[in-house]
Length: 293
Image (cartoon, helix red, strand yellow):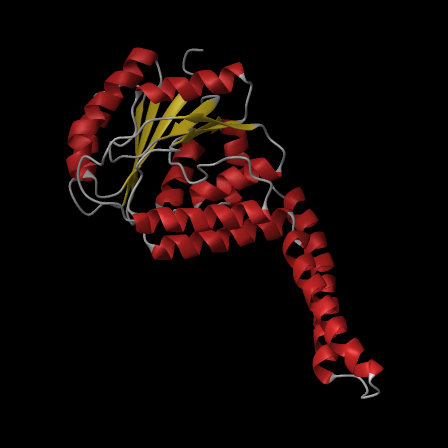
């Protein structure tokens, strides 16, 4: 049990939060014999200096510094590469996550022999109505495209098997969508993913950098991961709808002796093309999946 968990914290311009939050995290990790990796993701404030003031004094504390901002996912992936423990857990640098919940997720992944455990914020105030609507749309699209049984797909607190994380991180984006895509990768590859409730606090300082651009990026990455693991989930419905619409449109016209409608013919051909593209994508998917290290 000792030294089997690494706590990963990506940080970008969180100097005010880190002054209060970082000492608590360090103390918690020391008490539980957890390792700690903080990634300063090209911060332009004093975050690096604040983290440095502790990094060189504490055992088991690793600081990774990015000269330029690589993004939330890029920061986490840099930490995953340096992780040597069996499990790793990601938490945010804004102080919203309660440290006591780390043990809850840690016990869950061991007791259930799970591959990933998601900290669910279901039922809690997690942002404005604008953000709630965005998350609901993303969740709906994700559940339509993938057999997802997890509610809080974009939770920043997730614990997972390090070996699997290192295997799949290469197909994950550097953006905020990383949090969603790594979950989809685990589920798509039939790994055991569970969910337990956690509590959250308000941000200590500052405001979230998540915007509508993040939502569009996330939806795009969801599409990418579906095309990678199950492309026919996208191509087959489009093919079927186009083909059926073409027949529905063309048959009545043909029965009236007016010949073949050019619009109906185009719709049918479009359906056939999408079906063939799906078959090609399926073959490419098999090749790409076989190359995942």
